[in-house]
Every structure is written in C-alpha cells, then in structure tokens.
Image (cartoon, rainbow, N blue to C red; front, side, top):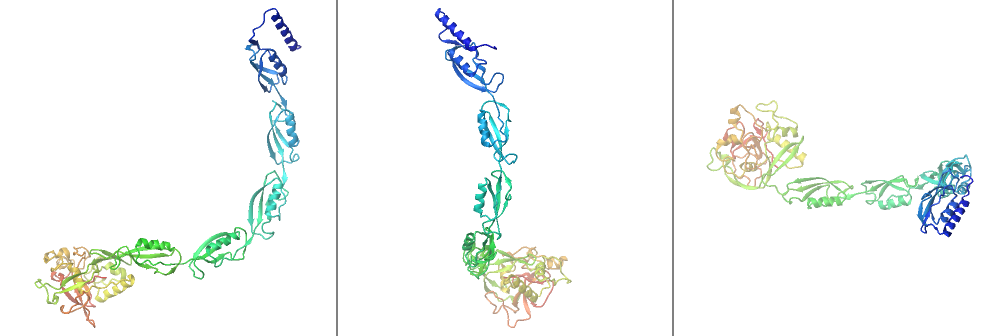
Length: 603
C-alpha cells in the first residue's frame, strides 16, 4: 500500500455515501461496517472508527517492530464486520522504546532518564563498590539499548558506601549517634571491665574506624563498664539483692549456712568482697545465715508433725513405728533432734510414732549385726496360779505352794537364742570342738552359762539402747502355760510330747543327741516355740527350795548376796518328759555350761 493516501480514500467513501443518499439508496440506519485500521497511527485509527459511527474500545500496547511505533497492530472485530452503530473496536498498538544508558549516573539522574524513556524504575539495590562514586549506578537490568515496551521497569544497582567512624573514647550514647550519622547501624554491645577509659565509654569497635562499609552495616561496640561491689554484710537477703541490683550487678549463687553471728536470713559473706571494681552485671555470690529450731512435735499426729517439720524449713528423715503403752496409735512420742534444737534449714528430723499398746500375738523384730533377726512376741498382762496342781502326776515338792501371781505384759523371744544370733553379736562360738553339738545357725546356742547370757544381754542393750534381760521364773512359767493350768501347755497327755518338744525319745533314743533347730515343733497359745524340751533355759532367779515367800508380782526372786545357782526351766533334749512339764524347775550353777543349756530373752 505504498503511496496510498487513506485520508483521500475515506474522503471518496464519504462522497459516495452522500451520492447514494441523494439518489435514494441510503445504507441501513442501524448498522455499520468495521473499517480496516491496520497500519494506521493510533490517532488515524480512532478517527476512522468515529467516521464509521463506531466507538474506540480497549487500547493495548505491545512490543512489536513489524509496524512503526504507535501504529495499529491488530483490531477486534476485524475489518468488514457488520456492527451496530456505536459498537467498540479494540486496538493493539505497537509501542517500544530502548533502555537508556544509566551506568555511572547518579541515582537521581538515572531515575529521570528512565522516566524520559517512558519506562519505570524497578528494584533499587545498594552494594558496596568503589568503581563509581557512592550513590551512582553500578548496573542496570535490562541493559542499555534493550528495546522495551513503554513503562517497562529498569532495575538498578547503586554503589553505596561509607566509612566506619572513629568511636574510641566516646560515650556509648555519642557512639550510637555517630554510627547513625554515618548511615550505619549499632550491632552487639558488650560490656567489659576496663579502666583505660571512663566507665560507659567505647573501648573497641568492629569494624575498625575508616573501614569502608555498605550503608546500614552494623558496628559492634565494646564498652568499658565498671562499678564497685557494695558492702552487704549483715543485710537481709532481700536487701542485699536490692543493693546488688542498684549497683548494676547481678545476684550469683546463694548458699545457706548455719551461723548465729548474724540474724537468720542475713548476709554472712559475699564474693567478690565489698569495694571490688567490677564490670556492670557481674555476679555477687552470697552466703546467708540460716538456722531454724526443731518444732515441738511430741503429741502430734504423724501427719501434723510432718506438716510442722516442713513449715519450719526442715525435712522428714525417717518415721519409725514402735509400740507404746502410754501414747495412742499414730501419735509422735519421740523425735531427733529434740524440740528447740537450732539446726540448719533442710535438716532432717526423725520421728518415732506410737503403734499403740501391743496385743497378744504382736511381734517386734530387732536386727542384730549382719541383719540377723531377733523376734519378740508380746505376752499380755495377766494373773495365774504358779506351781504344781495338787494332783499333778510326777510333780515335785519344790513346785509348792501353788500361789497366785499377777504380771504386767512383756516381750519374750519367740525362740530360744540361736547359734547364729550369738555369733552375730558376740563373734564367738563356745560350742565349737564340744560334743553333742550340730553346726546349724538356727539351732539353739549351747555351752552358754548364766554369766555368759548376762554378757550377751549387756552387749545387746548397749547396741540397741533397750532393756533386754533374762525372764523371771514367774514370767517364764506364765508365758509357758499361756493361760493353761494343765501339766503341759497342750494338756495333761504326755503322748503329745514329740509334737511340741525335742526330748530324749526323739533325740538321744533316735541317735540325734544334740539341741535341734528352733521352731520345728508346735508353738504354745502365745506363739512361743520350744518352751518344752530342746534346751534348759536360764532364768534370772536365785534358787529356792520352794515358793514360800516368793514374789507375787512376777519379779525375779533374787537373794543378797546372790547364791551360786540359778533357776533353769523347760527341760531339754536329753531328759525325759517329766522335766518338760510347765511347773518343773531345776537348779544349775551360774557358771555351768553343757550341750543342753541355753537361754531365751525377754524385754
């Protein structure tokens, strides 16, 4: 279409339209034909649209060099389409420009050049670079000369740099102002004890002064900070902590120590000492005097006692239950340390709580060295007739006269003392190398004189702080009978002897001539074993030919001065059944020993 004059063409079309009108052949009054706009300038295309009694629709600009910049690339609807009058014609216009050369320009001038090229400023990045002056363009994207649609963004990289100011010796506040004035930022601030500069002034900086940096780079500071440790001696813990904080220091480890040089809760010592020069925030370790008094706990319930212990800043060590005739069950009757004792906070308190009064059959166990148990059975208080019945078969005159005895309750060993128990406490074995003895720890200890038994008791009481002893003769017979009045504690029939006792028929006559293991036969009604047979058992009493003038309260009948012999009870493995009767008594020299002589404890 080279040399074609579109304006002239449309003039001819207008004349033809007028002629047709004059001769009576007008076009439709409601429709128009879309003109061909390709290649026209944007302005001519709009004029042609209006001449066709149509309207201009959306105009889109697109990078395209097939037609001159500003001319029509496309139209919608296409040329020749019949449309209602006033319908819109959408246009696509070729638009392009070239990216200007911006490298080396200042940021401000680069932005002006971008706008003059009908482009837009894209992302601006600042980078440390001294190839161009600070603030000038280092790079652009797209590069200079690139053909671009109008309004396309140009991304810029701008050289930005500053130098770290010299902050040495400045106050922290002034250093921060200087950093901000250099378009930099304040980094980590560290405080260090140093008296090279006044407290609060700059000791060091990183990076060093004069270093070239991008804008906004951080400067780390080391600040001289020091104070002196306050004198805290004698202050309360609370006041000492307040004084530490007021000195811009921190509270370090707090240790509590028993000391009455100052009131409880006050400062005994501090580290570092008062007057020491310190960096701000340095810790001060404190030693605080702390003491408490053991509260009065006797008479309280176990639960209330524990509450009182904890309220006093103390702790419960152990709670031991023991029988007590005077204190109800569950009530504390003894403590350690005693009430009113000054102790450190956190000290443990031991409680002994009453189990109440024991009842028949209750047992207690005492542990001998090596955790060897010694079991005791509670024998209840009571009254009985001591001595032989008038018609008792095979009885003897020294068991007369039968008389009433009233006894309080007491503890009695469940078994005769064993070899294992003797060795655990005494560390000896008197039966070794003797005849008629078995090497069995749970068999009755033999070759034990009355005097040896007393030595054992003395050592046991020292170990346990208890009051173990030999039974009185009345206690022994009362415990043996166990509320019976017959010849034996199972009745009057001796044919049951082997069920309850080791005696000559099941030992010497059976080629087992020795004291046997305890607890192998049936017990009596109080739960005591071997009260008949096995070994004669020492009693505390001196010997008397009968019971004339014998004590009626169950106490041991002791002469002054003491005689040479003591009472033995219960019979033994080598004797016949007569000796196993509950009332039978024999008299043995206190220093005597043999393989059928031992003892049983009471407490």
